[in-house]
Image 1 (cartoon, rainbow, N blue to C red):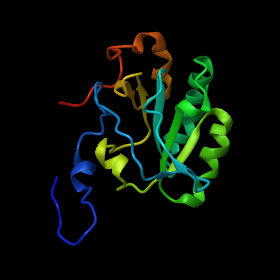
Image 2: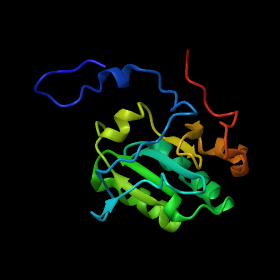
Image 3: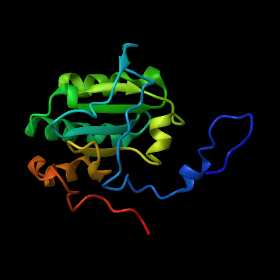
Image 4: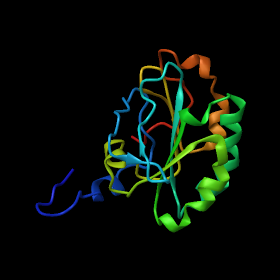
Length: 170
């Protein structure tokens, strides 16, 4: 990635990169600088003994809004509690209500800038992205389609990536 002295992070390399999601096996590193939408410090559940979900939504993304019901169904079907379902939102914070209301009690919402550390570290270049993270804090399944989440079984996430996610463009 190109660096510019005296300026913020250059996200042009990420914007021009493939829109494919994060590769399975990628380790999710705790970000100490996250705040939930209520202004409270927030930590990712990287130390859980159960799989968890990290979703990325753009508040200006019509597809993100359309996929929200399928995402909620996945969370409900697998009994994933709110503490293990994290939605990272980018975009105009005045538009947070559709995500907060649509997600309801099914998950936590964190608003970040598109050039935030978590977005840059994971090379998120398109929205939505859904990551199912295993007990070892590595991505086991990655997709840009909430309907594809229904194809996985959380019991398969103990040690290896699950086939069938979106594959990076080569």
